[in-house]
Image 1: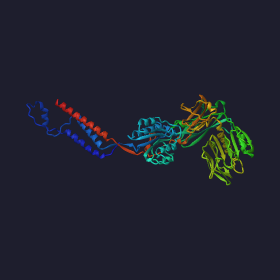
Image 2 (image 1 turned 30 degrees about the horizontal axis):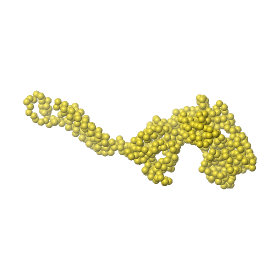
Image 3 (image 1 turned 90 degrees about the horizontal axis):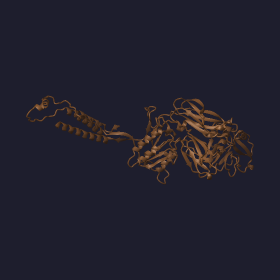
Image 4 (image 1 turned 120 degrees about the horizontal axis):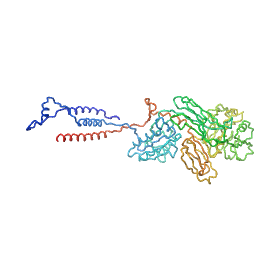
Length: 637
């Protein structure tokens, strides 16, 4: 609290005057009485030579002093500094992403965000309206449409919960732009008519759609003491197909070294393997576990866990489902002998290889994966395809021949098929200059064109080599050991995953999962049980069902007509969410670690409270008047 008119405190000089008045003697009036025996005390007082009297015990003096204090305080215009700047229509966006579950503030960051949102609701004017939006996927992110009903707004805030997903900020601000857009316009016309307040712990990834607004921010967070699993995969070992490789990538976001255990366990069993790790601050390490192939493990959940107490627990665990080794029928359509390619395919224990010439090819023939070597059938068959150097291009990929040598400038480091693959030194003397479709993902790029890319459209997966990878006169890809066989094996695994009824069975939170059902007309009910035991019923319009509500870390179970159909796992695996470092809105070097930290760029306004002080002064005046008359009545009696 502060005072807008501090010079009013000079009026406190009136207090000594009030006290002095209580010391002064009363001027007595003369009266003729028959006897002075009853007035001896008064006579003695009149005989005193000093003009002052002894201060008597009276409630009037403290009441009068207190009255003056309150009156002077009221004249000084006391005011409280509060966050202001709310428009008549305000949109409050509350971050509900995974990092908002951090407990560095003594409670979750989302709990602190809710408290800040409730403060904004308390500032809503009589004619004001507010909308509550969270950062989940539309259309579920609008928790309360524009309303002036504060009870509905408070209920919407209370119902918010943390989702184990990154925020979908672009979709959120696109939604806000729709409400600020004049009907029929393509751009935000009146962004000033709607105030936007964003409560979050990270403002570093705001989309361009947020730029038209004068965004007001409330930042949360105090520290980033967190260790996280940022990479997790379960694959068959290339050198020993009879065992699984479980890769656990761990990253430190703490400011000091941390020592902890990385534990591995199978469903229904205690953690049977662990490894001690000492991780320096801001560093990353990988731990590789091996599991022997055992039929008893098929369909079970393998879980990796960090045995550490940090600020965010949801990224300390990752899980996957163990399945029996797959088998893929692969058809190679080629008019050439390809010893490097056929050697890689024949040594893969999951591949049943069949090879035909282009003149003998007629259809997919029940094969799971098709490989076309410098050949593009018309029309393209259904199924998953690998194209090797499609010189004439593809229906979805125009191509031109390029006889010049190319230099690799980039490779996709995070895609699952690029794990343990390094082709930055790949040499290619001739290639195709291609134009990718919108759904294409480049894996290996030159300064002119992608050399290797993949994508998925209409339930069909495609891998394209825009050069001849197994011609030793054109490139050194075939001799890139071990990258070439690893990449081909992981391509086949990615393509072959489409044959399973649940695809994929291991996702990051927020990613969709496809469920394929045969004889869909005979199915009556399909449900998914989430990790928190919530049951969601799905509507099946065809044999492919897309489940998008993977917002919680853990294992999901699919039921068809009440019977278990399959399971899949969702893990956070997001360095952006695991990095709890708060965005700095203001410089505050005096903030101690461990204290609740809330920063804001909202303008502060003065909320004057002098009226309350004036009302208190009036009450004191009434009390003083009542005490005075009570004293007079007592004296007269």
